[in-house]
Length: 72
Image (tube, rainbow, N blue to C red; front, side, top):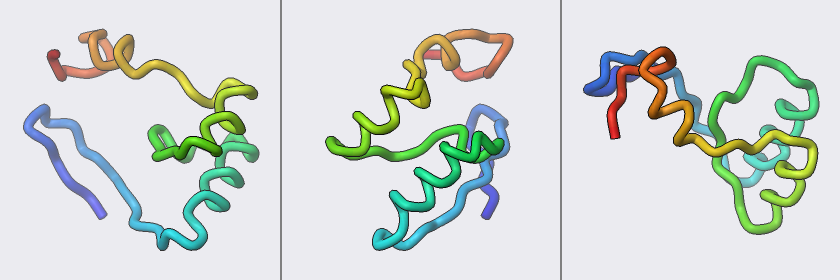
């Protein structure tokens, strides 16, 4: 699916059933594919994602006008 926010940035998103969401995210992260740029995590999963460096603060990306036109 595609959506365009007020910033003019095209967003591609996928709806994944809850029962296999975390498995799909883990596989994508471990494969180091281009997916996903952004993902939802839970209390348990954040530890699995943070240790290998898959999690970063989003503020530096949002606040950098070279990366996005979004302003905070």
